[in-house]
Amino acid sequence: MKKIILLGLTSSFLFAGGMSVSVKPVDNTIYEKECGSCHFAYPAGLLPSNSWNKMISNLSDHFGDDASVDEKTFQTLSSYLNENSAEKSMNYKRSRKIVENLNGVIPDSISKMPYMKKKHEDIKENLITQKEVKGMFNCTACHQNAKKGIFSDDDVNIPNYGKWEK
Amino acid sequence: MKAFFIATLVATLSFSATVDDFLESLKKEVLKTDLSFKSFDYKRGEEIFLSKHVGKKGELISCASCHGTDLNKSNQNYFTAKEIDALSPKVNPKRFTDKTEIEKWLKRNFNDVYNREGTPLEKGDVITYIINK
Image (spheres, rainbow over the protein chains, first blue to last red):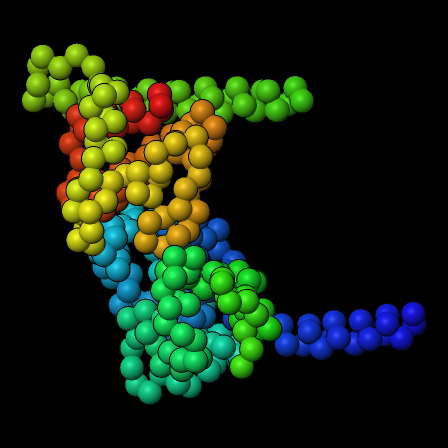
């Protein structure tokens, strides 16, 4: 019995090790509400500030949707994104990797940036486009604890596929 | 329990006051161009909500594509699959309690579905449909 408990403990420690917070979770209620109404409120550390600024400069045509906000809200969103963007969050592993892999590009979206494409290249297209996921933009469809800033392979559960085994 | 009743009552009252004021302001707008206007219409609102149009993204959609046809239930965003809370204030007391929110979403969603902003008449009709459905 003791052995089982010990084994359980050890494995949970190992598990916890692999499940570390690698992106700073969203900690702004206005950002969470305004951006999280239509899609997962992406952590600011998933893009460099120049990408965020390019994106929010045209919110009335936001990937084809009208996501316009009033001036006051815009200022809040802009400050939050600029203060917490990837290059300002280099102590978080994923943010650091994102910045290191930019190769001079200013990505238009999180899913299109080089690091993100590389990390998802082994996943079959139909698993990403299936109706339970819809596209690469839908982090939480597979990354169960994305909201907590956890993006480890161990936390991935793909609909109609299951746990991700490399 | 008592606190819950009071909270619900307050929420309900604030909903009525906000939406009534908003409908009243829309009515004034409509009357500027149509002196014979009497009242907003549930049936016209239903047509606005359910009819399909080529929206901003070039796809044939209606308001119901994201909000569903049963407004007492939550539904999924047609494009992102994100859960959207029920639209009806009957089951979701947070709905229609903030004028800024009402205006923001009407502007965005008319643009998304109709590729243009709604007229005061259309806005009044569709709200009348949503809050009474």
